[in-house]
Length: 633
Image 1 (cartoon, rainbow, N blue to C red):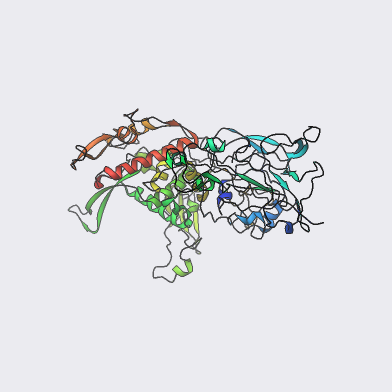
Image 2 (cartoon, one colour):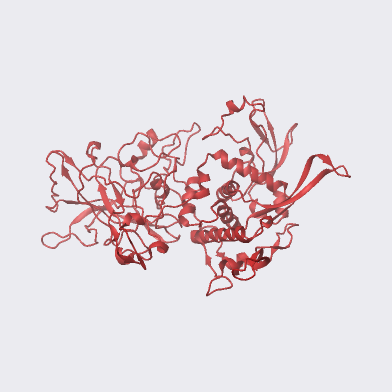
């Protein structure tokens, strides 16, 4: 008799990149998970008419998260057939490739998920020293959390993976903990295969579902718990266990949430609204620049550094953006003293989305804005797109041989911005190129060498901390759409796309680029940036009391001081059409509410604090661009 175990339902809400970007962070041990394909033959994992599936929609108290669970490739399979850039093996069939992206291709729609704030204790499926699941006999609980009883009222005992615990990182998704129920079908007759333990058709899945959990928008739909019975506006899930691949797939069911003609949350609906209509897509807007080839952001970062190095004054604006004052000289003419002729002095914020996103990436990954010597060769535009160097050689000037700029450390320190250049191992070094055009870095002076102050290579001692996060939040906000909002989902997804989170690829390669046997597969065991480790608590009103118009200029190692005001156009009376330039309080005019007219306070840390900090910066940017005279921006 041929048997066919559980089949896969199509995921209503899953898309290519979601699994890779949102798998939960590992616990104390790097879990390999159940071995792919160990639960049956590949030929049995085919689509057939729907059969009974466990539902964790309104009843299961442990269901907390959606879409596919972490992938089930074994370490050997990943090592032998992984893609060139790491991540998902290219020749694996079955559920591993159903809805997951090729490594590095973090594209597609991404959705709002139920996430940890950071510091919570989470359950993690336990594994042994070899990464194999630890199973133990336990009472079989159904989807409602009730024991499954035999004819004598005694609970059945089944093997299921046990739990251990770990501390959650802020921003990582909460995963479901419910165990699904599945059926086995005779391929020849189509009949269900009876479970010899119970005499019934149902079998207990040995591994927890570990699905991602989408949530509905409170602002759009209100509190939906009256219909779902689930807290935190979680959407109901239908779970389907595939015994062949030993994994659970989840979907938001296409079931009625609001019937046509029904009134909900004060609104009457003309058409039927289904639960899967409530899934929220994250809108990235200008932040989609993060998906561009590395060379795009590298060039933008270099452009920002050149502008910073040329500035004769650096301060911040009301939103925290760097404002540069730069003297512009004629290329040929001289003044009466024989110096280059000064044409104008320009004061301008760094407002380019590309430059700000590049600054954010650098600061978050390295904790400073210094380009190390070993990364100063001209940007290679042929990597992941662009013009290959062999083609550029045909152009009149050929590819650039000029080293990438590195930020002027003393320049930054003089304006009180030393924390943006506070790298370990700052030193004087010298650069030259050999006959093959390779960069040579020396600690000693040499003939024909250029002298620099900076770092020669990245250090693990450097990381984003303290005041770095204040600028990182501003950089992120300045790269986003002015009319949008900053959300935790947007930040976490962008961190994954930019490589700040490690969610694709592997942890270790040999000198030839081959995967090492003990390398961690980040697509299975992702590492999320932990905002809770080194970030200070954000206080909204205090922050913006110390921004605005400069009172004392920066210099001598001290930053500028500010008055908490901005100069904007204010209508003299409602509807008059007469506007006057007026100094107004940032806190009062941007954050004021009816119950807190001087500004509503917020204090927070971890990923929530960072999210609100970035969103506050974006609100100020939007206010400035709406009401400030363009020449003052």
